[in-house]
Image (cartoon, rainbow over all chains, first blue to last red; front, side):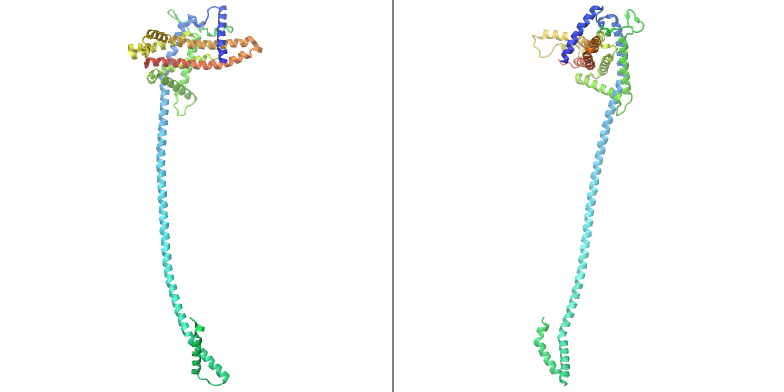
Length: 196
Length: 244
């Protein structure tokens, strides 16, 4: 719609112009050749000077600026790329060191553990031997004690019973007959008291 | 002055009359705005190219964006062979653009609204392109008028049409710019006149049109400069890379 109005008003304006020029003389100022030569002269002069200054002085500078910026940016990008590669390599190195030291730490730990286990085992063996020896000695002692025990008991029994008889009867009793009786008893009941 | 919408296109002498032989080359308001445009362009691009910082400031950015804009336009339409003509097309684009834009300031004079100015530019381009074509291709440049793949019966007609269209290039190029600028500025003047004549009651509608037209005219000012430059590139492309 706006376009339509635009063109209609252009038409209208030309209509208006014609009317206006009907009143005045001359018509369109553009078609008045009075200043054509002047306009051509000044156009050539100004445009020529502008062209010369632009093409010789200003445009090469601008293109230079653009080029130098482009190359600078490219350089920067290259440098950044280089640094990225460098940092990647450094990162790899660092990773390697870390994993290496981890392995080392692991092996040290393992060695220490093995050593500790060995030590413990050796000590335990020594202790075991000592304990065994002591146990054997104790057993021996017990054995001897046990072996001697019936004889002692018999002796005590004989002495006790002889004294007892002496007190009860008031007469001396033959030790040997008592010991025979005790031995007989202990043989009969020995299993009951010292049963192995 | 205010009543006539065409009076804004009047050329008048500033200062004394200067004559070289029979030719009148007096300094006029047209000359003034040509010089103003030229000085603005040179100033902006001189400041914009002075410092070479990696992070450009505003004016440098403007200059570099214009540079890449025009250089991309040329390489897109005319290819890499057009590199030597970059400075000319850049100057042409900037000159037309600044003249158009200066015209958008109230009470200024629009240099490009004069047919003689645009015609001189177009004629220079036309002659230059033709000379370049003949230098590059010799008489082979005439093959431009003989499109390939056309039946022999139609050939005489086509060649005549091609020659006429080639010869009308400077006229179409210059009239396009001149007519656009003149029509736009006249329209703005007419609507401005309506605002005054309809007064406080009815003047609001043409005023809003005037505001909208100002935006449109700024667009047209840029667009016509771009079209002028890109058509030059296309003509140059015909001369550099003969396709027919």
